[in-house]
Length: 260
Image (cartoon, rainbow, N blue to C red; front, side, top):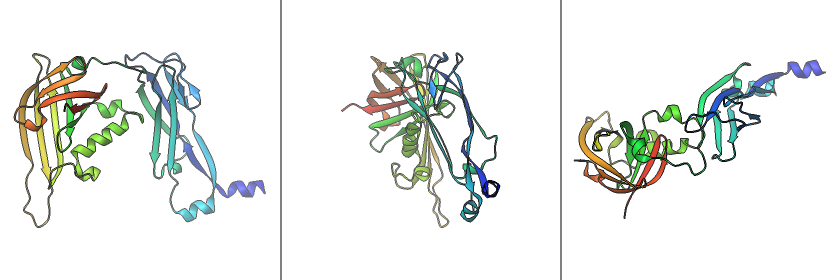
């Protein structure tokens, strides 16, 4: 009977093998950081072993597709903000034995972590999104996608995308007819100048008329005051110029809200 039952089952993936390294923002390895059910070693390394389960073959056959894979593992260490590793794949449960998921490095943020905003912006390239009234600005530093590998930072990028891409996000933040607005900002160091390149893309239809993308180049400047405020001069992109509070800041992201 046992042989019959086992032969009627198929193995499904509950969790792939997950490996990575946990470090602080100064790139120091974090010892004994709890990741799922394991602790990191002296080098900050961890490994979560692969897990699988048996499902009835006939049930799986009638489903006609592999089951989804949904994995969430908590990261926690005293003195640091709690974080999560999440893996979602609509048919990932059908992967064969030996599945691996390598994360490389995860940066864990200390509780009450502080930043030198001027140093963070110095000689760096960012992408910018803003709402209709330009009273809220999202800044995403180049390299964000390589840095952000956990649930703590992922929502920020989704909010940024909602401001910059009507087509992708389904939002209605951009002006009528515009589907995408890409704004690149280069912060300099000497006397704090900045350069802005804004490319606007428009909806195309079979019948037309269709508007080609347009590009605006601007030169301006910025000043950071008391590590909590920014005076922004965006040159001929006047809607972005003004005084802003730095309401959120992290290694690769920043949120500005206009002073009222």
